[in-house]
Length: 155
Ligand code: FES
Image 1: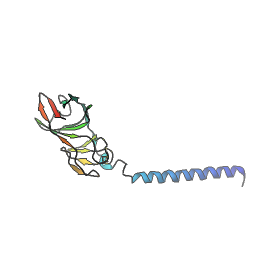
Image 2: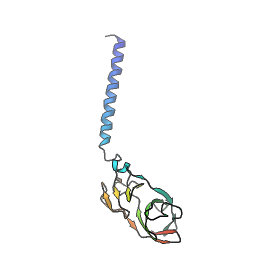
Image 3: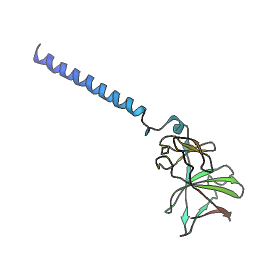
Image 4: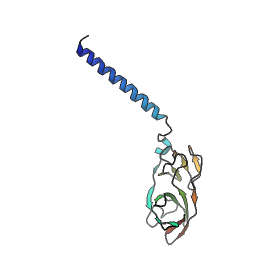
């Protein structure tokens, strides 16, 4: 065997070995609990709104937003934390914490009337109750009031 043939053989060996290693790594990732599930990929991103924290309550203006109509939902970001807010009737809203109870990912997805965690696909109803795991515990729910197109969530 010549030196040229030996070099080619080593390259071929390394290419094959690296491919096998990468394939086994990706195969391992496919079954990992940290991979996004197909349940999560069915969701779309929630609209994002900014809330104003007054020191004791979070105020969210709903005019011309995803919350302007009944059934609408949004991720509300604020310096007091992030919340999922949905409009349940003309004058009522449901507010829950946006932190998934499984491993703490922020819930950013929605699929119809269900909130969907992007990390492992846990699903919650608009009141934060678990519809599908791996999460087992409900999202923390907060009371809210509505007046003058502003939702107020006491914190
Ligand atoms: S962090 Fe795992 S499902 Fe949300």
